[in-house]
Amino acid sequence: MSEPRHHASDALLVAYAAGSLDERLAMVVATHLALCSACRAGNATLDAVGGSLLEALAPTAVAGDALGRVLVRLDDDVPSPPRRVAAESWPEPFASALSQGDPITWRRIGLGLRHHVIDRGDGGRGTTLRLLNAAPGAAVPPHEHGGLELTLVLYGAYRDGSDVFRVGDLQEVDEGVKHRPRALPSEACVCLVANERPLRLTRRIDRLMRTILRI
Amino acid sequence: MERAAGDGSTRHAADLLAVARDSDREAFARLFTHFGPRIKSYMMRQGMGAARAEDLAQDAMLAVWRKAGQFDPGRAAVATWVFAIARNLRIDVLRRETHPEAPPEEAAEIPDPTPAADATSDLARQGERLRQAITELPADQAEVIRLAYFSDKPHAAIAAQLGLPLGTVKS
Ligand SMILES: [Zn+2]
Image 1 (cartoon, rainbow over the protein chains, first blue to last red):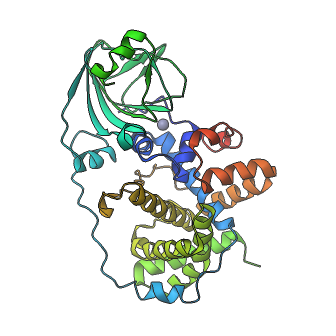
Image 2: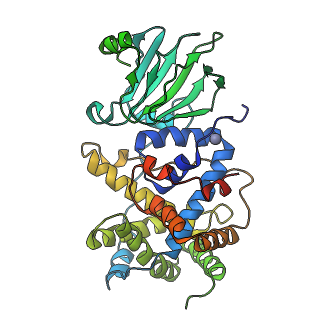
Image 3: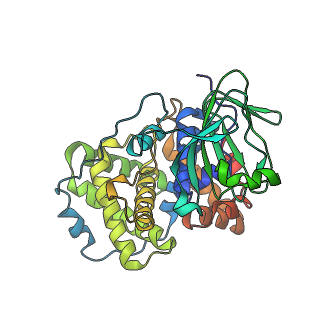
């Protein structure tokens, strides 16, 4: 597979390395990293920045018996990590996360779009994570965002404005940006999408249909 | 005064490899003495109370012991590797508190993507260069970097201020 052309921004990679990124956004970034050597290299550097900052922190004295308390735990049984049965044909770590959740059930949401919701985001107020499956040529109605939207292409390709996003590409759309992505006409497109908050549909009719469409 | 960072990180790597190879408790004790108090500071910078930071520092060092076999000196400096462990532990703990219904073992840590093949540069020197670069930044910019790593600010707030030194970080 060729290397992605659309990458995570520096700010996103920093938040990921710092561990301050919401877990659903982090899942999209982590899966992009698995597909993108350029961002992996950036991530390694940013981890090293974290290491340097840790090294430079003024130490805070630990309890006098801290070492002793850890030493007696060294021989404890190690809890075995959960068995990861990676679903085939999805990139990691998304594949493992998917295998721990419900099996994929595509829900029709109209306009040639189907989705499988992985994380509803704390009762619909927080960040959501889902797979979006667009039929060839299908378009997501024009919408803008109340927060960051991350889209990672897993199959097929889509166009947004003058940009084409292919497998492995990550699109980062900021709050307030309106756009209308459309799957290329040749094949279906499946993306992993995280939305910081529910997106707002810009056309009134779409807004009215929102409860039906459930986008 | 501590010895030069380059020497320190070589010594840490030797100690960590001794832990992995021989379950060397003295080597572990040296790593504990160096990193335990720094991990505690790291946790406290994230707003945790001293008692909790202490517990997590101990848990992180226990994870250092258990995961030592995964350390690859060609891939990351010890401080980098320890940072990742402390960060992932913190993420796990916060997630368990936000989603108390999930069993702990489902709290996936930030996964380690496979390393880039060309990432075997001189990591100790890279770490030193980064530390140096951060030291030489104007105070306000260095603080932005520190805030980005040591506070739970929403990423958008920090993103507005980044762009400065990080363009040099990512090729
Ligand atoms: Zn990338």
